[in-house]
Length: 230
Image 1: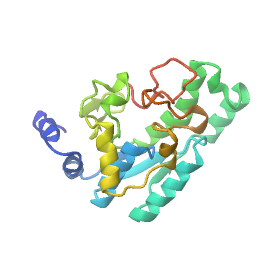
Image 2 (image 1 turned 60 degrees about the horizontal axis):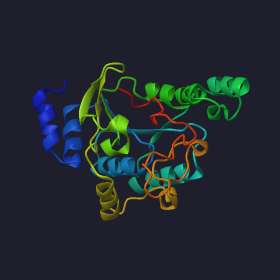
Image 3 (image 1 turned 60 degrees about the vertical axis):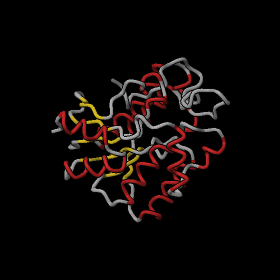
């Protein structure tokens, strides 16, 4: 249970200190979902470098960039800890593709959200079973939908705490950490891909665009897939 005092303490600690605090308070049931983006690489480094008792996992949607697999392999080699991988149900993917088409997500927001639900949300829900705390790499400046997210909150739907250690970090702070600790990152970032999702749903952004403008660029939505909604 996170008390008001605990929540106040978390606000005063650095992200690294707060991760230690959370993993100590909850001796088990603390998990971290990484998409291998820059923010997630920061948290992965903090967890593995400090040998914190946190299960780190990722979702393989079946439509990722090759660079995701390359970085996942490098992480496993560097930290000597394997990140767990969760996959979507093959029969559900087959049904969706055979009924609607291999790239049906381009045709409507509903199709895109259904694809995300099958490939991301349902595997995430399996990964979060029996978890007490779900750590994410969300930052408030990434999108309007995330501006008012707190450092820690109760997720009523999933019955767990959602902890966002980098929620108030700037993008420059993320870059500074990566450089200071020599953390590996997706080579795609050097090519203008800042927020990276599935390959057919992500493009490089132009100068001055929001960091998530390259996600589902063909639609005018809140740029969310359903993993992080209030």
